[in-house]
Amino acid sequence: MYARHIKDQTLDFSHRGWLYEESFLFYDYQTDSLWVQATGQAVAGPLKGTILDRLPATQTTWSEWRQLHPETKVLGRPKQKNTRYWQDSYDLYYATGKGIKYQRHKQLSFGLGVITLAGKKLYPFEELEKRPVLTDQIGSDYVLVVFHSSTRTAVAWEPCYKDQKLDFALSKNEKGDIMLIDRQTGSTWSGLTGQSTAGPAKGGQLRQLNSTQFVVENWPLHYPDAPIYRGK
Image 1 (cartoon, rainbow, N blue to C red):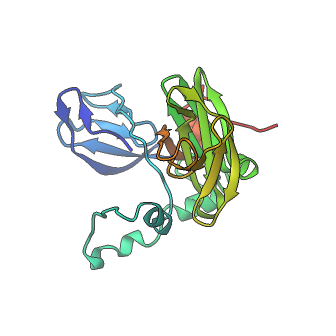
Image 2 (tube, rainbow, N blue to C red; image 1 turned 90 degrees about the vertical axis):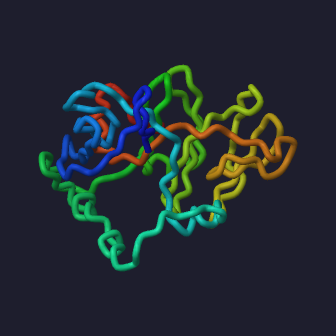
Image 3 (cartoon, helix red, strand yellow; image 1 turned 120 degrees about the horizontal axis):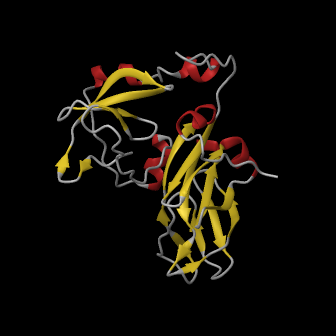
């Protein structure tokens, strides 16, 4: 997810229908610059080289999101126009690895790409299956990655509360959430909302970091210098 503002201008975007290094391109109506979905960077046009600011976002199932955030409003569409969204048009690509430019001949895998001011790092879901509560470091930034396997939901948080760095451990893996406990205060936290639900920190909120689900095999195409996490 990206912010639409460039300096004092608000841009309007639409899908171009082209691919760049296995990522789709979109354009803005104001300058007709071409932007890469995977990086948020303009690769052609008057704004070439400009990078859109990322916004924190969570990719999950609708039922899971509705359970965690029942007050959410949805941008609706007429029922007759929803048919094209019932199936992911990239399913075959994910299943076979056969893209426009790269023919990998294998099923592709996903991970969570975390982007901080200090750097970028990809956390493959196959690694998060082994460690659903993972504390790591990207440059000087501490990162807490939480993975809810049943809904394939991964979220990244800054593991700090009231200027104190917290060490988290798995408390309970529930059907609709993954509960954490921090060693410093003994408080319980929701891994998917970042909110403390019990203990001295009850009501506290962790800051969500910018992240996006990413095809592991495509990560080096867009971030060649950014590492991929591999557990020991």
